[in-house]
Image (cartoon, rainbow, N blue to C red; front, side, top):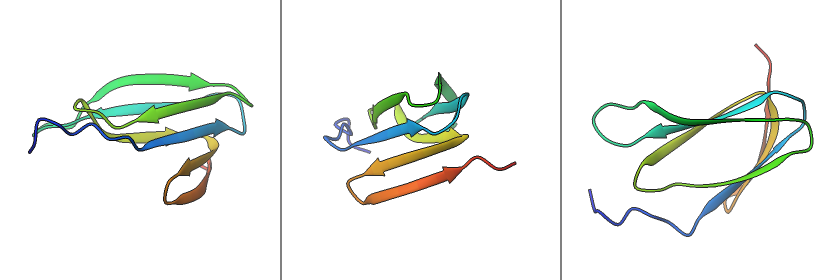
Length: 77
């Protein structure tokens, strides 16, 4: 894997309800949680994949916008 895995791509996450969790997952042989944020209704977070972040997990009702389109996480359990 290249050491330059940073990307200009980013995602926008807008919470539709209180308590939306945004969790960053690490790169490498063992995928682990490395960062988490909790968003309340109406809050927006802009996230980017980096040399440390290979995936982002979102729990709760939120709208996620990417360069590939928009998707809504419904937050159902």
